Length: 60
Image (tube, one colour):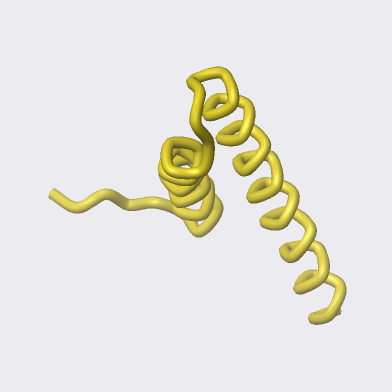
């Protein structure tokens, strides 16, 4: 009944939904909303991979 997501999948799902909300409430026109939502998603993905590498290197 419950979804079994890995940590990466859960983080990416969070990034998708948060980017959608930020795009909707953060800009005025549809074009700006789409671009800002994609920008936020890209920043989230970069942060996820950047922080995961920092944690990997910190635990070696």
